[in-house]
Length: 166
Image 1 (tube, rainbow, N blue to C red):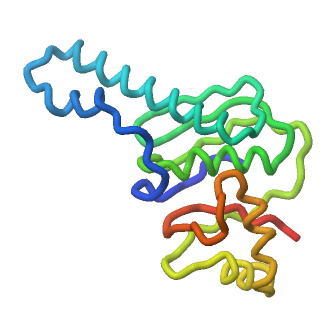
Image 2: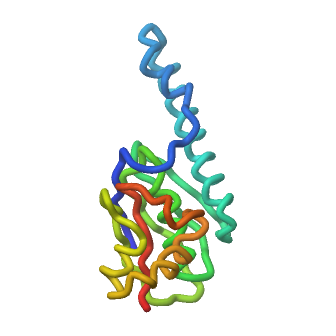
């Protein structure tokens, strides 16, 4: 799949990182102390991202995540293309993440879904009408985005959704 772009200012907020705040407020600290704080903040964010993926229940063997500023690179093995797409969306729909570099291996490939960025005023019915010509097919989109979506009425501008092929 490759590199995916996301709206950096949209998405789920991760727990506020006190170490990152300290790096901007500690002007008198030595360079090595600031570097250590930045690395600690990076490792904390990676841990939170890994927890986000694991909490979905999507099985990813050998999950490994790297973080470089606002770019996440994800490694591992998944069973299906849809699982791979969901992992990318879980990571990309986090506030502060602008790109996800997908390095996941897939055991059983299937047709790739389209990705759609939610706009103001969108509903799953409206999106279903646009992609499928039938607004009543919104449950297909809802199901394709579980467990990221827990309610078909709770989508927000900037969120990226999977739109599977029918």
